[in-house]
Length: 190
Length: 364
Image: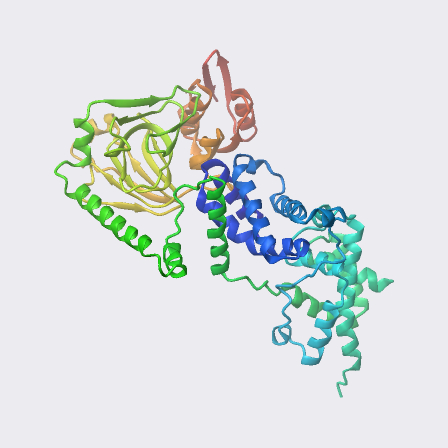
């Protein structure tokens, strides 16, 4: 997660002093997560890299107004989303990007059984539970957990209602939770 | 159904969305259904696993590609330090001997100019005197000016300040003299940038820093935002102070009156190295004037009055000596009038003020 005070500091350095090293820092902070997010829409890592470069071109060109952006974290995801959709071919764009076709790759759920202190058997269940979540659910789970978006922000970004985000998060946690609970009931402690 | 409520609350808790009531409700649910504790803990652990970061090498490489894209759009980022990538480019283009050759030649040129600079019979100070044509930029009270020097360094000149530099600036030398306060964003170059301010000499290569040296004020301050600067003082020959980012060097100026009384005492300026003052919302007090913000923290009323005089182009007189030594904190004042600012200060500190035209009198 990125601390917003650190981001604001970088933004004002860029906005006020054209500070190119702060610009680079900002790029390094966001690059990987934005490329992942853009890949979900463009289905191409290469296009995603181009999209993110365009996003940062936009940021540099509008640098003087950076400090006036109320929620930069959401703003940069929205630009990334818009530019990613623009990059789709015309007929694809008309169908708009479907939340149910995204391929989500988790960076923080690498399920290290040792770190989680669970058995190999449970680990298998857990990872299956996550894989079996509907794509839309995975995407929302990822945006909240890994990209540090607030519910409200995720709703705004994906044009969904707050209630939908809440429901999808509930589903994600319930499925994951049940995969472990199930195991617990079968464990024989004697 | 209760189970859904439980998962919903747990998700909200993990995402930092839960209200206090919701947290209490969750506590209660966990207490009444102990079988949920285990899964909650595992999910908690799962949630707190840090994301595996992509290697910084990849991101750096992408940044280099990004810079290339910018150049194609003819957007040039100035003085960006990417020394690592000189090596990278070489390894990607093993046959690129031209680049290598260029770098060697470049390095030799740099060395020669550096040597020439240090061994040239004239010291930079005499150069400044020898060349007669000077440019002078000054600001009146109440106004801040941004200017771009011939070498494309950027300077914000605070109210009531003066910056002088000669005709050769940016060609043969980068020597400037400051009276007052200025924020410098110095363009990287092999020609060192020298600033002289009230006996203080600051040498930099490429960096951003603030110098405050108003005649009549008790101290001369150098605050470094990034990069590195070397500071020397006429009265402390042989000593070099090297500032790191976020540090500030305060040198006490000699008080003319004091000097006469204590003639025998050595007139060595007192020196203090401290860090910059950040407010809770990340403003750096030392450079807040660049954004036309007036912020102060633990400063005497006297000092605050001088800052207000510059920002608002007024004369402030504090009638009560005890009051002028009172330490204040306040701000940021940006678009407020001087009256509004003073009224805001009255909330925390007891004083009266009267305004007659440009003159403000402060009494107990």
